[in-house]
Image 1 (cartoon, rainbow, N blue to C red):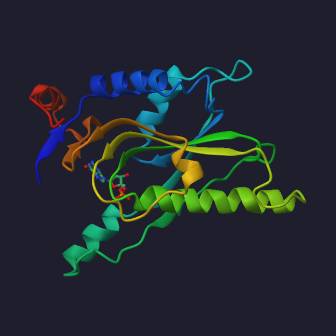
Image 2 (cartoon, protein in one colour; image 1 turned 45 degrees about the vertical axis):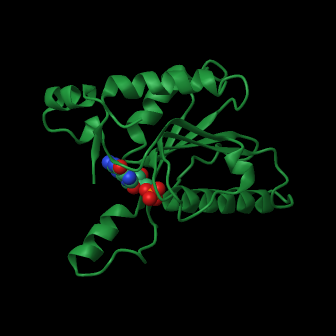
Image 3 (cartoon, rainbow, N blue to C red; image 1 turned 90 degrees about the horizontal axis):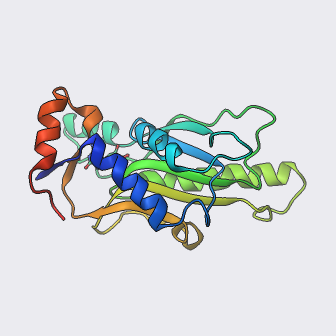
Length: 205
Ligand code: 5GP
């Protein structure tokens, strides 16, 4: 598969542009980020730089771990097709007692939306957590004023294997839409100078 190299500077700039373009600070107003490790880590930290503080504090970032690609690779190495591999949790939220998911504007952050399996799984699980907390508080599931949105650096334009619910797609923010190519991120580079040079060659638009 053709590759496209993405530099740190391109990432920084596309996040800045996306925050402006989607008016994220004035419309969605995130007050909690949930990042999918490891691809979402650097993007969520850069994104925080462009988000308005809430009560004079930086928007907190919580991390969750999900695995899909490593499992697919392992299945393929064992002679399988990798097609039937599902996402599984490797790490989940462990919020301090005083921190609630309810009545928050939560932005789920990852680096790339490829088949959408990972995002759809994470969204389903977070909705379950939100509803469970609502029930614990004696509320009807879905009745709190909690917003969940998705922020990704890259969305690959291709048929997706999973869909996101409509109310999530209303708050779906992709910095850049790209054709279906393999994206090489700078945090995976061994030689960052060479990687940055490669990112300057004409990339797929
Ligand atoms: P999805 O569940 O949308 O198929 O895949 C999501 C995960 O697959 C991403 O979080 C990322 O870890 C990995 N992935 C998918 N496409 C690419 C790509 O083009 N480049 C890199 N580096 N990772 C990818």
